Image 1 (cartoon, helix red, strand yellow):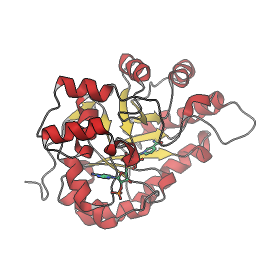
Image 2: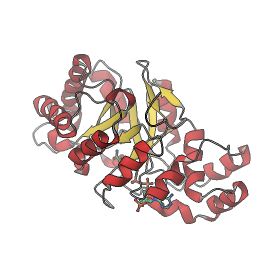
Image 3: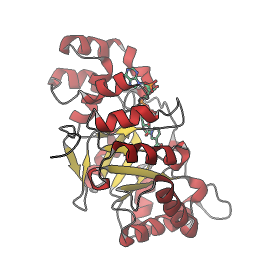
Image 4: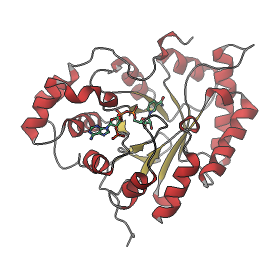
Length: 285
Ligand SMILES: NC(=O)c1ccc[n+]([C@@H]2O[C@H](COP(=O)([O-])OP(=O)(O)OC[C@H]3O[C@@H](n4cnc5c(N)ncnc54)[C@H](OP(=O)(O)O)[C@@H]3O)[C@@H](O)[C@H]2O)c1
């Protein structure tokens, strides 16, 4: 029997057969990092999916938290991301291996290109994306990354990658909450077998005071955060809320014991106003 029972958390199957837990814990440099909160999420809440990025500056600390949890590497789903400053074939391969070393792991379950725009001069974004993706394809073949994907990619970026490369991304991680519902992109991903993962499910807290969300929360005797996370999961979206507070992490995990009604889903679906709370890739060519 496992030392710490896992959350009874459904998974979503990737096109290569791997199963990603539909709920994960986000991490970030913005708003701080809490070692105790990550250990708590793993040992007390049953979280098995952690999302991070080199950019967030907490890879070493996360590695320490994983070690302290005492969990087996094989029981965890770890997602990391490649920063555009490391784009290009050689730099990408090195950055991935360096990130593995920083976190004290031999592989990532999922490794993403963080952003569609390159920071390098001299080549087009499309050329650099393709060159970088070939490095991820090789890391995938070598087993350093068990799945590979992209983040903040729009349909045009995915179409170009399909023309230029061989492996279709397993995942696209994109901003997703009631105010930001990129439905055409979601449909495209579904059609192409790309799992849609949503970040900032609470719109960084902005959506929690929305009257429609609050009214649905009252109806179900749940919190506004639970309603937003449940809505995202109920739409089949892999969801990664972030908190550095133990009580909120616990709260954000209690989303499997109830269902939103059809009318709730429609009401939340109508809240889209197109706002981004993080960054907007619309003008990246
Ligand atoms: N790929 C990308 O480009 C990208 C971009 C942004 C984010 N992400 C990923 O997605 C994760 C989540 O996104 P995010 O951090 O931007 O936004 P988020 O999860 O929508 O919101 C996080 C904010 O909400 C607060 N919060 C969390 N749970 C709460 C609760 N139950 N009640 C009230 N407030 C609560 C947190 O504060 P406390 O921490 O103080 O509780 C924090 O300020 C990140 O950690 C990261 O892993 C990826």
